[in-house]
Length: 187
Image 1 (cartoon, helix red, strand yellow):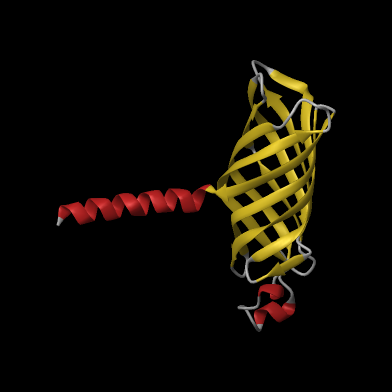
Image 2: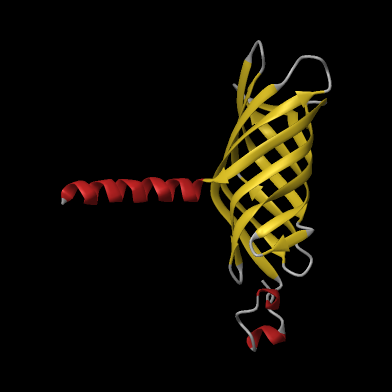
Protein backbone atom coordinates (compact mmCIF):
# COMPACT_ATOMS: atom_id res chain seq x y z
CA UNK A 1 0.00 0.00 0.00
CA UNK A 2 1.43 3.32 -1.01
CA UNK A 3 1.38 6.28 1.32
CA UNK A 4 1.78 9.84 -0.06
CA UNK A 5 4.14 12.29 1.62
CA UNK A 6 1.30 14.29 3.21
CA UNK A 7 0.18 11.12 5.03
CA UNK A 8 3.18 11.49 7.29
CA UNK A 9 1.88 14.84 8.54
CA UNK A 10 -1.73 13.81 9.25
CA UNK A 11 -2.08 10.08 9.96
CA UNK A 12 -5.74 10.37 11.03
CA UNK A 13 -6.99 11.49 7.60
CA UNK A 14 -8.57 8.60 5.67
CA UNK A 15 -7.80 10.23 2.31
CA UNK A 16 -4.13 10.43 3.25
CA UNK A 17 -3.77 6.76 2.37
CA UNK A 18 -4.06 5.58 -1.22
CA UNK A 19 -5.88 2.31 -0.46
CA UNK A 20 -7.96 0.75 2.29
CA UNK A 21 -8.28 -2.97 2.90
CA UNK A 22 -11.84 -4.33 2.80
CA UNK A 23 -12.34 -7.45 4.82
CA UNK A 24 -15.06 -9.58 6.22
CA UNK A 25 -15.14 -12.83 8.11
CA UNK A 26 -17.80 -13.81 5.59
CA UNK A 27 -21.46 -13.08 5.03
CA UNK A 28 -24.88 -14.65 5.05
CA UNK A 29 -27.27 -13.54 2.36
CA UNK A 30 -30.90 -14.01 1.38
CA UNK A 31 -32.59 -12.92 -1.77
CA UNK A 32 -34.75 -13.71 -4.70
CA UNK A 33 -34.30 -14.26 -8.41
CA UNK A 34 -37.16 -13.30 -10.66
CA UNK A 35 -36.62 -14.99 -14.03
CA UNK A 36 -37.64 -13.26 -17.23
CA UNK A 37 -39.16 -16.62 -18.21
CA UNK A 38 -42.54 -17.53 -16.66
CA UNK A 39 -41.32 -20.11 -14.12
CA UNK A 40 -41.87 -17.93 -11.04
CA UNK A 41 -39.56 -16.57 -8.34
CA UNK A 42 -36.56 -18.47 -7.02
CA UNK A 43 -35.47 -18.12 -3.37
CA UNK A 44 -31.71 -17.75 -2.89
CA UNK A 45 -29.53 -18.25 0.15
CA UNK A 46 -25.77 -17.70 0.21
CA UNK A 47 -22.82 -17.92 2.56
CA UNK A 48 -19.31 -16.66 1.83
CA UNK A 49 -16.18 -17.19 3.87
CA UNK A 50 -13.32 -14.66 4.24
CA UNK A 51 -14.04 -11.80 1.85
CA UNK A 52 -10.98 -9.61 1.28
CA UNK A 53 -10.23 -6.76 -1.10
CA UNK A 54 -8.89 -3.27 -1.66
CA UNK A 55 -10.50 0.11 -2.29
CA UNK A 56 -8.90 3.25 -3.68
CA UNK A 57 -9.81 5.98 -1.18
CA UNK A 58 -9.99 8.97 -3.50
CA UNK A 59 -12.09 7.33 -6.25
CA UNK A 60 -13.93 4.72 -4.10
CA UNK A 61 -13.22 2.08 -6.77
CA UNK A 62 -12.57 -1.36 -5.34
CA UNK A 63 -12.58 -5.09 -5.70
CA UNK A 64 -13.16 -8.01 -3.36
CA UNK A 65 -12.40 -11.71 -3.57
CA UNK A 66 -13.93 -14.61 -1.68
CA UNK A 67 -12.28 -18.04 -1.96
CA UNK A 68 -15.40 -19.95 -0.93
CA UNK A 69 -19.14 -19.33 -1.35
CA UNK A 70 -22.18 -21.56 -1.02
CA UNK A 71 -25.35 -20.91 -3.03
CA UNK A 72 -28.73 -22.56 -2.52
CA UNK A 73 -31.58 -21.97 -4.93
CA UNK A 74 -35.12 -23.17 -4.22
CA UNK A 75 -37.49 -23.28 -7.20
CA UNK A 76 -41.16 -24.12 -7.01
CA UNK A 77 -40.36 -27.71 -8.01
CA UNK A 78 -36.68 -28.29 -7.08
CA UNK A 79 -33.76 -27.27 -4.91
CA UNK A 80 -30.10 -26.83 -5.85
CA UNK A 81 -27.01 -26.19 -3.72
CA UNK A 82 -23.47 -25.52 -4.93
CA UNK A 83 -20.25 -24.07 -3.70
CA UNK A 84 -17.89 -21.93 -5.77
CA UNK A 85 -14.18 -21.28 -5.47
CA UNK A 86 -13.72 -18.14 -7.60
CA UNK A 87 -15.87 -15.21 -6.46
CA UNK A 88 -14.87 -11.68 -7.42
CA UNK A 89 -16.65 -8.32 -7.24
CA UNK A 90 -15.66 -4.94 -8.65
CA UNK A 91 -17.51 -1.83 -7.53
CA UNK A 92 -17.63 1.94 -7.36
CA UNK A 93 -19.06 3.49 -4.21
CA UNK A 94 -20.36 6.62 -5.94
CA UNK A 95 -21.73 7.80 -2.60
CA UNK A 96 -19.64 7.09 0.48
CA UNK A 97 -20.29 9.08 3.63
CA UNK A 98 -19.81 8.24 7.33
CA UNK A 99 -19.89 4.50 6.89
CA UNK A 100 -22.74 4.39 4.38
CA UNK A 101 -22.11 3.55 0.73
CA UNK A 102 -24.08 3.24 -2.51
CA UNK A 103 -23.07 2.55 -6.09
CA UNK A 104 -22.80 0.13 -8.99
CA UNK A 105 -21.13 -3.27 -8.81
CA UNK A 106 -20.46 -6.35 -10.92
CA UNK A 107 -19.59 -9.82 -9.66
CA UNK A 108 -18.64 -13.18 -11.11
CA UNK A 109 -18.97 -16.57 -9.41
CA UNK A 110 -17.19 -19.45 -11.11
CA UNK A 111 -15.90 -22.98 -10.49
CA UNK A 112 -19.18 -24.41 -9.22
CA UNK A 113 -18.85 -27.76 -7.49
CA UNK A 114 -21.70 -30.28 -7.60
CA UNK A 115 -20.38 -33.83 -7.60
CA UNK A 116 -17.37 -32.58 -9.54
CA UNK A 117 -16.24 -29.17 -10.76
CA UNK A 118 -18.53 -27.79 -13.42
CA UNK A 119 -16.47 -25.54 -15.69
CA UNK A 120 -19.55 -24.52 -17.72
CA UNK A 121 -21.61 -23.12 -14.83
CA UNK A 122 -21.23 -19.48 -13.80
CA UNK A 123 -23.15 -16.57 -12.31
CA UNK A 124 -22.71 -12.93 -13.34
CA UNK A 125 -24.43 -10.13 -11.43
CA UNK A 126 -24.50 -6.40 -12.17
CA UNK A 127 -26.53 -3.78 -10.38
CA UNK A 128 -26.63 -1.34 -7.48
CA UNK A 129 -25.51 -1.96 -3.93
CA UNK A 130 -25.82 0.07 -0.77
CA UNK A 131 -25.02 -0.59 2.83
CA UNK A 132 -23.28 0.18 6.08
CA UNK A 133 -19.66 -0.44 6.95
CA UNK A 134 -17.24 0.44 9.70
CA UNK A 135 -14.35 2.57 8.40
CA UNK A 136 -10.93 3.23 9.86
CA UNK A 137 -7.93 4.93 8.25
CA UNK A 138 -6.83 1.86 6.35
CA UNK A 139 -9.55 -0.77 6.83
CA UNK A 140 -13.24 -1.19 6.01
CA UNK A 141 -15.48 -3.81 7.61
CA UNK A 142 -18.74 -4.36 5.76
CA UNK A 143 -21.63 -4.92 8.18
CA UNK A 144 -24.81 -4.94 6.09
CA UNK A 145 -25.63 -4.44 2.41
CA UNK A 146 -28.56 -4.66 0.00
CA UNK A 147 -28.25 -5.37 -3.72
CA UNK A 148 -30.49 -5.26 -6.73
CA UNK A 149 -29.89 -5.74 -10.42
CA UNK A 150 -29.51 -8.32 -13.16
CA UNK A 151 -28.14 -11.85 -12.55
CA UNK A 152 -27.20 -14.22 -15.34
CA UNK A 153 -26.97 -17.85 -14.19
CA UNK A 154 -25.88 -20.22 -16.98
CA UNK A 155 -27.28 -17.96 -19.65
CA UNK A 156 -30.68 -17.44 -17.95
CA UNK A 157 -31.45 -13.81 -17.14
CA UNK A 158 -33.04 -12.87 -13.82
CA UNK A 159 -33.95 -9.73 -11.91
CA UNK A 160 -32.22 -10.02 -8.52
CA UNK A 161 -32.77 -8.49 -5.08
CA UNK A 162 -30.95 -9.50 -1.91
CA UNK A 163 -29.42 -8.55 1.44
CA UNK A 164 -26.22 -9.65 3.19
CA UNK A 165 -25.02 -9.38 6.76
CA UNK A 166 -21.46 -9.94 7.90
CA UNK A 167 -20.69 -12.99 10.03
CA UNK A 168 -18.53 -11.03 12.50
CA UNK A 169 -21.40 -9.10 14.18
CA UNK A 170 -23.45 -12.30 14.29
CA UNK A 171 -20.64 -14.30 15.90
CA UNK A 172 -19.79 -11.45 18.29
CA UNK A 173 -23.40 -11.02 19.41
CA UNK A 174 -23.72 -14.78 19.95
CA UNK A 175 -20.51 -14.86 22.02
CA UNK A 176 -21.52 -11.79 24.04
CA UNK A 177 -24.99 -13.25 24.65
CA UNK A 178 -23.39 -16.49 25.79
CA UNK A 179 -20.98 -14.62 28.08
CA UNK A 180 -23.82 -12.50 29.51
CA UNK A 181 -26.05 -15.52 30.17
CA UNK A 182 -23.15 -17.41 31.79
CA UNK A 183 -22.13 -14.47 34.00
CA UNK A 184 -25.75 -13.60 34.88
CA UNK A 185 -26.57 -17.11 36.05
CA UNK A 186 -23.26 -17.45 37.86
CA UNK A 187 -24.29 -14.75 40.36
